[in-house]
Length: 380
View 1 (spheres, helix red, strand yellow):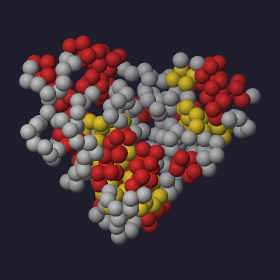
View 2 (cartoon, one colour; view 1 turned 30 degrees about the horizontal axis):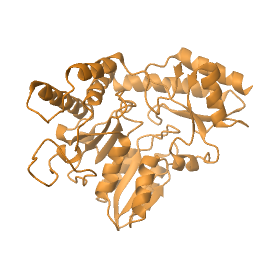
View 3 (cartoon, rainbow, N blue to C red; view 1 turned 180 degrees about the vertical axis):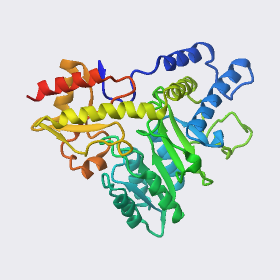
View 4 (spheres, helix red, strand yellow; view 1 turned 120 degrees about the vertical axis):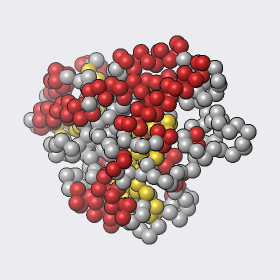
């Protein structure tokens, strides 16, 4: 199979990730922090070591501020529902995923208001001004994606976060499509909360996500329960990371995530990004030559786009194109709204969706040429 659905989850996973997950399941599958025996201690070390790797990758001074979650959606919900209260106002970008929009829509029914700031493609100044224009006296939080999961557009999120800090507003970046692709330095950033999907650009297993807290304002917890610490206290611990890690964590998944980080570090984040973006640029240039193909963004330039591309074939349903690519040519892409209706409304594709293709470090130029050839045969 030619797998171009890496925006949903990366495949294949590095062999080292599979090996590490199997190793933990076979030899260290005890409950981290829930026992003093050797296996439980080893499991705790595995979790802690991955926490340190994440802190180093994203340049966070205290590994305790690295919180393991089930996915990026869980991390975003923790911030949104743990920070906002009735009477607060939040600003989100026009490219946000339903992982942001739906929890905010739920809070809207209990007194939280929100505004949508339009992201102007390749116009950072206008985008920042659009966010500035949305600021109100009661604006408490601004959420911006690191890159659109549909169109790959990268908003100037660092500038947006710096602007917000001038007004004393908290900031959250949804880096589901940016982790492992863009280089983050939280020690020199105005990002207060960074939310990550472990199973995408970080090449970890599904069921892994990360919340990094980069400020003194700690959200309220979504879940309370056993943490393996202060068990005699009826109250949830306030110390990090225990405050947010109730219940048994996904030790095999976290171990695999640690191996994924090692894999990225060995190759280099920027090298991975350049490889994937070069493939998207190759794809874009070839699609641009096809009269029956509709593209929705400008040419994906370095530092302005994530390695994501969306398109349609004139007069054809996007789901049909994806089905034929899969059934006849064994090529995996994704079609539809991609859980991001705001992005589609912003790009005028809400009524039909798009076909999305996303390469990974394992994708080759030959894969792209085979995809282009197959698509040409389908639409001509």
